[in-house]
Image (cartoon, rainbow, N blue to C red; front, side, top):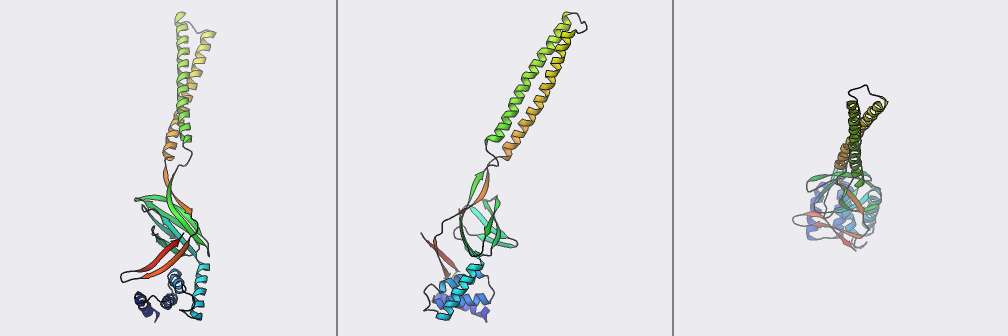
Length: 266
């Protein structure tokens, strides 16, 4: 019975948008086990002119149903830019977000908001919804770095500074080796004395220090390059809460389409 009644009420609303027809369609959808969001919107519109068009019993029933749905679900409004394609995910449930107009009753819980901008995927973000509450968000993107921009450059600069320091130590080691060789040549290839031995030991120490400094500086330089790459600007999703505005939701039943028209009062 209810299956046959639904299309009849839809057709009737194209001719006469009477609150009783909205109520009957809402009641039909409830009995068909449709998602609360569908029946809820029609119930809301059926009560917009008060009790008179419906009668006391049906008016109270509609109000009771509206209150029950609001208490058990979350009312979510999301707006976003035209270059963003977004959706809500929860388990197997997938809800596309119409960025021009998205107003939806959803079950409470945790949702994943995934999106892409100009076809490029953006890392997802989470959205927590509580029963009985209303949420209004502006969905947008914001470019973020993992760390402050100066940190990778500091590591890279440290590597360069260490390499320069290593070069200075290397030059000092070379000078000490040259001084040692000159001393040996001066004595005609004699066995190194204490002074020459000290010079050679100092040269070897400086050479070892130079090699170590080169190694540490090179590692810091490579690490800095890797950090620069990892710290490049990346788009992230941002859900910005909006101040509440009065919302009016009106079902639309036309010759070519059925749906809901939402308007806001600022």
